[in-house]
Amino acid sequence: MKLKFSGFVSIIVILIGIACLFAFRSVPVTRIWSSYNMLYATKSVSEQDVLEYLSRAGCKDVISLSSQRIPVRSSVVPIEPKLNSYLNDRNYYFSDQEKAFNLFYIPSEYESRTEQAVVSMQKDANIQAGMDGHEKYPWTVPLICLSVAIALLFFAKNRHPFALGAVFPVCMSASLPFYPVASAVCLELLALFMINHIWGRRRYLFAVCTSLWVLVPLITATLVFFMVSFQCGILGLVVFFASVGATCLLRSRELYLESKSPFTYELIFSARQLPLMYSRTAKATAALMLPMALIFAMFAVSSVVSPKSTVNGLSVPSPAGALSEGQAKIPALKEYYDWAWKTLAFPYINLNAQNSQHVNMAFFEEEAKEGSVVTVSKFVHTEDGIAQEDETVMKFDGKFKDSLKKEIDDLDYPAIEKLMKSEGEQTRVAYSSSLTGKNTASTVRNGVSLLLLAFMFLEVIFMYIFYFVIRRKKYENNK
Image: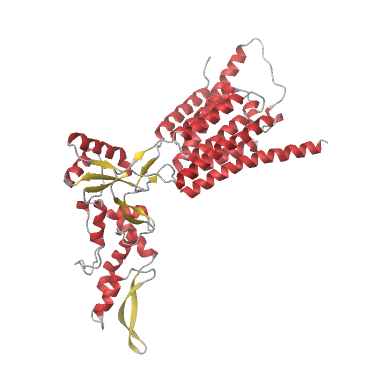
């Protein structure tokens, strides 16, 4: 059997699909912070020794206490005035509440290297150390997809093409075990099952490419993949073409065996003459509601019962909701804005005004408010002579905050403000030993993921209902 050019292309596409499934794989990880892993090490070990272990493991841009500097200075008043306690309070980030451990923050891209450093510290020097992140593979996600594929395979009329087409989507659910991905894979498997009974008939491709019963679930699945992440969307396309390539190879083999057979036959009905949604596929659509409802319920429960980050029972800085009375407040991005505003506004406060001490204390003690302005008086020539005007030199608004964010990005050292920025303006931070971790299993927000899962579940229901509406109309017309 000579392999045609199309066969070589199919094999290449399949190999690319296998490579991408391996290269794009992702395992959900729970950690306290969105973009950083936290490492804790006993204070009996010097900070420099811990940084040395991290450096040897290849970790870069490690945020530590010794690396902190003053991020903003006034060009007018180079001496840093004591405006509030921000610079001291940010040091809370680098110690647990009991002051027994030093804390370090490493960009999440170095997670595996951080694990290596922790292992080295524990083995080489018996240092008490650990990190907050841990992987947890959700086996139920790919198992649901595998169960759906096996069930549909059992009822498939042509099992070989269905099995070859289904293997790559199922592998994708194992490579990216995320709930929206699993639900989208179920839609792809349903589409494969619908076209299974027209396999090998004339005008097969035309029937597949023009049927809404096939196109709607496939397009929905592709859109969901891209909404999860761009990488997931690309992998979804690669997996689709790999499935096509595998079925093309199977069809080439069947045609080759037919050409060698002394007797061949032609199916009377073309693919276009057979409905894709009929009693068997309608039952499969109805049955698919169960696993998709299960995926939806599992995701809803996992969103309510948030994952916990393990830090050996330590009380460490963590994103918090509303701070309770008396709870130590650790500065976040909002407090940084306030401190930077007062630092830059300090040179323009009038020290000669009446009750200036009271005015200045009020300015530094009150929290900066949106729309607050700092003005200076200047004298200009007018038709009536010299007049005094107030000129706005600073305004506490979105533009001011954006400039501060850019300055944080431009800092040439690993500043704790970079972690604050990655968490956003609404984050509040406090010591906590009951930590709610951030799960990287979904790269879209929980609300969006829940909507996607609900939409896909409802789509299957509407497909099933629509089939019965059409069938009933046909029955009434034939009466």
